[in-house]
Image 1 (tube, helix red, strand yellow):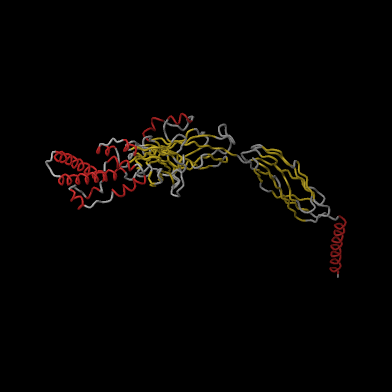
Image 2: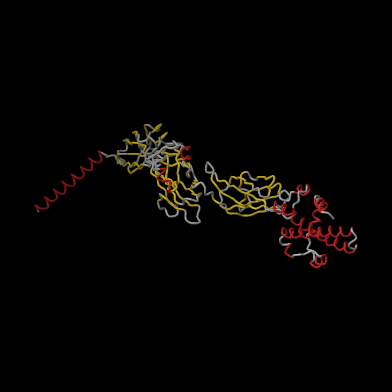
Length: 509
């Protein structure tokens, strides 16, 4: 049996499998010893070294057979001696072929040599994944056995074909973009680098590798950080917020270290008007931050930017006018080089040119109207046939215009009112307007105390606004009876005169 015939048979998948299983089965040491071929039991553990040993034994046996055959042709040795040498040669050839096929059809394996996480433009997280072919039948193998046969090259033992690669999370969901990438051929000694976008920002992912023959490998790996860029990447949970004038808000941020040079950074804000106070703080301790440091083994930290808006609109802080600004992280060794950015107006391209970590944020100042009702007098005393006149001033003390301010009164039973004006179409910030109210009791009103509640409602930016209610108290007095009063006076005078006369008469006796 010749080597070429064995390799030709291996070209057919079914036959190849039978040959591999049959020829890679362990050969008994006794059988090899009888045939005169040296055997080492570690050849099955280290197939490439076993192949080298088998090749040397095969070449020695072939040389010995050719020499003995030449002697036989000259009738210097017997046929029996030549047959013994031929059996040794055949055993060595079979052993060599077995070792060759064991290495040639070794299981294919792809290793992940590097997985580097980095940040692209626009704060997008990406991964560079490098794959290598570690399959047997490599260039060393070809150099060792010295085979350049066309059939051997067609088998391509050093090539892994049709590899599908994706990144998944712990829930086995694909988080890479694109979801999968295909490598047509992966040659030994020629690594391939794939670039994925991360749909979920993780520090550890599972790499799923699927071969064209259906075999699959899944390995969970911790992503390396790209230390060449020397930045602390910033990502904001809520990059755009609406804040009422006079209020404050926090921008929560995650800072991720991509540096092998610096682990201390200065936090700063670019493009925020000076009327808006701001500072950075540690969310866990609420301590203010100006510089922060990544500790050993920690590549991710949390921070927050707190901003305070003025009470009233200004030339630079206008209602509903969005303001774009940037939070930046400057490496400590570059602080003097870059300088103070607080009062500098910079474009996105200028910030990117600094090659520092940044995140774009947006702030939209919002205003809200506030109704204030001023009433100089809320207690009145009237006769049953009189009308109460009340003047109130309606003031917009908020930070946005009030529309359709409506004044209403909750009256006691059968009372009537007049309100002028009943609706104020608009009230600008700090504007005020006087409203006159009149309250008339019914004709059959009973004396006593009555209360009337004044309510004010409005709209501000299509939001309903209610003012503080005011209560007007009205004391209705009973109307005086002149005839009854005169008669009562006469009775009292008559009574007094009678007592005086009775006293005088009594003293004379």
